[in-house]
Image (cartoon, rainbow, N blue to C red):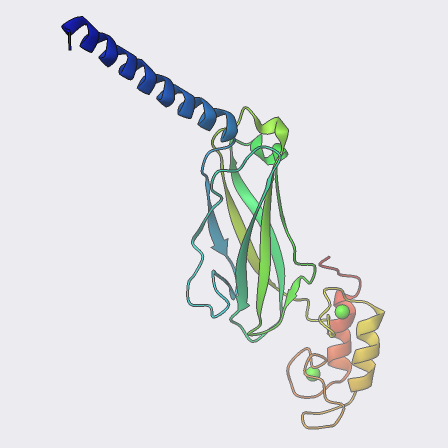
Length: 213
Ligand SMILES: [Ca+2]
Ligand SMILES: [Ca+2]
C-alpha cells in the first residue's frame, strides 16, 4: 500500500475515534449533568440508632446520595432503633449545609408520620432528597442528617407526643392504682414510686399544653 494512502487511512481512523470519544463525552454531558455525588454525615442523639438493615447489624455513618438529576427525587431506606427503655420522640433535622443556599433548593424530607419510637422498636424510614431545577449552579453540596431521640414529656401519659385531656383520661383510669393492680399504668406513675396519686397529678399538670408536634 502506498505510503500516502496508509497515512490517509491512519488519519481517517484517528479522526473517527476522536469523533466517537467526543460523541460519548457529549452524550454523557447532556444526559448525566446534575449535581455530582454527595455524602451526608449521619449523627444520632439519645438512645436512637440508625442502621441499613432491619436486623440492625450495619450502622449508618454516612449516606451517599449519588448523582441526582435536576428535577428528580432520590430515596434511601434506613432503619431506626430505640435502644433505651423509654419511648422517644424522633426529631429528624439537617445542618451544616454547604453551600448554605443549597438548603433552599434541595428539599430533604422523610416519610414517617409517627414521630414516637417505642422502647426497643425498630422502624423503617424513607429519606428523600428532591433536587429542584433551580440548583443548576450547584454541582457539589453536603449536609448532615441528625436523628434526635428526645425524651417524651413525663406528663405525656399515652405517649402520643402531646400533653392534653387525653392524658388526663388515661391518668384518671389509673389514679390510686399501685404496681400489680389491674388498672396499673406505669406511664401514669410519673415520679416512679409505684403508686399513682396526687404527686403524679402535679407533675402531669406542669406539662399540660406541651406538644412535640
Ligand atoms: Ca399525650
Ligand atoms: Ca407515683
